[in-house]
Structures are given as structure tokens and as C-alpha cells.
Image (tube, rainbow, N blue to C red; front, side):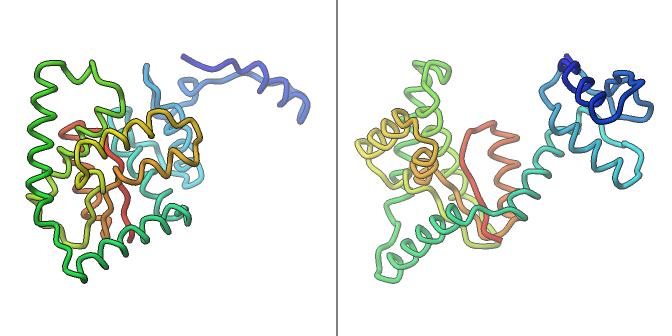
Length: 224
């Protein structure tokens, strides 16, 4: 499916009168071909990159998941969000202070396991598709946290605050997120669901297992 190029042609004629001929990606020799997918933006980025580099297109539509992640990592690395980063650092500092004061997370594993068991029991009877997006987010976050507890990451990592909440607090947090329609406020309300990693290698390992293999929906960031 291709966009209407009529406006582009009119603008082109205003800037430099023709003759012009409308071309699509499939009309240009050497360009990787896009089928019926929603990867238009990624293809445009890759076309631009390869044209600027003067290189031959050597990617295909099957590579889009990896290429999409690569672009996301570039954006996260080169264009950080100071406000979001500041909030992440504040949460980390609070956790570190609690540990220094002798507040241990001894009950975290038990709470996480109990929550996962309860959520999985509910899902077996009702099915994930019957739950709203926020409830699926909670289930996936708890499941991802349980997986993290079994791993030995190279750097520091922080589990979401929601895994330490009781059922009532989790419900209230979900309801507040579900009812919020302010974009800035939504970003703030997502913080209790955020996984944080010190190293990009740990971040990538997490994304590969949790998002690609297990197909879970979670929020994650890294600090490196």
C-alpha cells in the first residue's frame, strides 16, 4: 500500500517545474523491497542511510525487527530524555538508600512468586485476551521480574516498584494508569512498571528474552 503522492508532486512542481514522474520504492533499482507490512518509516530511514553512505542495500523485510531495535538503541543512546533519566536516578537512589538503611528485599521473591501464581491462575480461566492492556502489563511485568531473579546480570539492575506492592496497591496503580489521559502524567505513572539496567548488554539480553522470545509487554530502560 503506497501513500497518495499528489501533494508531493505539486510541491515538487512549485520548487522546480517538471517534468516529473512519480516513482515508488519498487521502481528504483537496487532498493530493498517492502511487502505488506507497517515498516514504512524504518525502510525510509534505511534507504536514507544507505544512499548517504553510497552502499548497496543488503537488508530485507525479514531483518526489520532487529533493525527497528537498532534504531531505537541509537535514539535512546544519543537523545536521552533528561526528565525521564532524572526520575530513574531518583528511584535508584531511593532504593540504594533503603538498602544502606538495612531495608532488604527478602520478601520480594516470595511476593513476586505469589503474584505470578495468582495471575497465571486467573489467566488460565479467563485468558489474556479478555484482560485490558493494563492488566496484561501487570501480568507480564511480574513474569519478567520473576525471570530476572534467576539471572546473573553483569551490571546493576532495578526491578519495577509494582512487584513489591500488595494486591490493593497494584490495583490502584493500574486504575490510575488506565484512567489517565494526560501524556506527561501517563509517562510518570508508567515508572512503577519500569525495569532499569546499568549496562546496555544486560538491557539487550533482557529485551531478547522477554520481548522477542516470551513476547511480554514491559517497560525497560538502561543507564549506560
